[in-house]
Image (cartoon, rainbow, N blue to C red; front, side, top):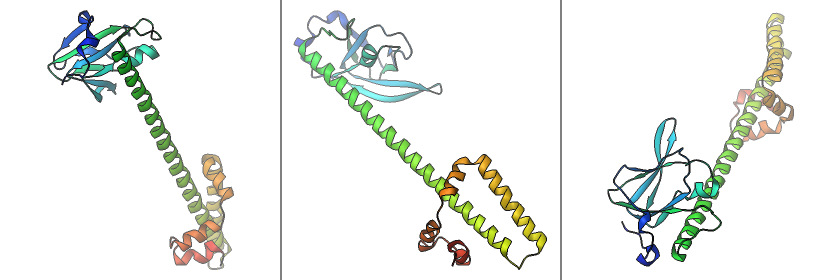
Length: 226
């Protein structure tokens, strides 16, 4: 695959031309940035990142695009490895000593600008998706804590009902009371997030659970106070 970049735009840059075969490394992750960006004129390259010592393909770039531009503008070592995916990769290597004053033909300047704009858009999209994912996980965690608080409150209500019942012996009631105290102590010391929600737990929550048919009939009177 060749790029649509005109030959006129590339005139005068023959010394910058490089050729690579399949699997050859063009940029190595972690190496010091040499102030060069690359224009992929022919072929395709893959962008790889090390994840737990395994090299993972994270992007594929076809002819007509720049690569290696992020580190030029952000500084630091190379963020990933770029490797040729085809046998006919041709690149042009441009030295940029001052990112604020890129000296290239207008056609290439515009191409680089579009590439940087895509980088910014992709970063923004990943950030938004990450934020949405984090918020979803936090909501799920909060919902799980609320459900756990309701379950513990239900157990407490059942134990309180047993403690007041005349159907059990004194020793059995003492055991139930001890179990109730143990629960309270453990939750207050070891489960502060649950303890906080227990304090705000309302009986109305049990009514909605009843309406959803989530409460066994045997517990309705105890939990709803009917």
